[in-house]
Length: 287
Image 1 (spheres, rainbow, N blue to C red):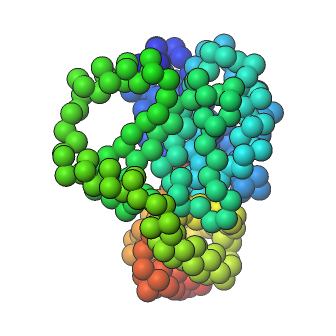
Image 2 (image 1 turned 180 degrees about the horizontal axis):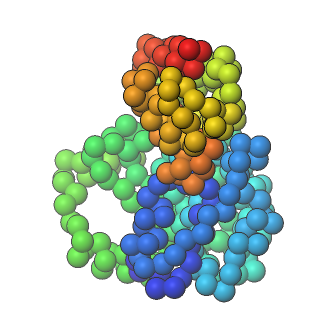
């Protein structure tokens, strides 16, 4: 809200967290999706980025590890995108890194670590995911001082209700070694592999291998145009609703994330519940 004016444009590499489009509109800007697919591991290319930029472009949102896909951009991939942005000095970068510590293999690379991007990248983060403090509602940002001061002015007029207990807990979490949460990341890693193995046994599901976060984002377009137990499936929303109503399994339609061929499945659940959920999905689709 401190950077965007009416008529400004925000680029959203899709799939993206559902709030990004609404946030852009709330700030009186417009947004443009840059599509990707499972075939590109849900990543955009420098060529796509260059083609999407217009004179109205003011900001781009990056999110790695990504919600909903679990995709993680490598350092070389981010540097290639930065090369494009170097040619457009009026574009700011908002880098959402809330899944920073939930990655499997290669460490998360921060976009602000790119020298040419440092002065125009706003990094946002929080304790909800890596530290399992979802309900505490504590987030934070790092960026150029003049932007931070402007955000403070805006934030002070909107909400100042972060309770002191949550703040003290956040200090403790951020001050502790990241190794303290490795047991949780290891468990998510096991559940990821479990879920991917179960997806292989479901006809029509096509998934990439997420490198972070705790989601899989399978393409379910195989079922579009079919009728299952009397329910016509025209899109991911229909498919997601079918799973909810017929199998009592909650997923999220990819439409909400700018990827209408997919559904999001979270594996931040017990192994017992994951096994039961996929059994119900298989039984429904096999019927």
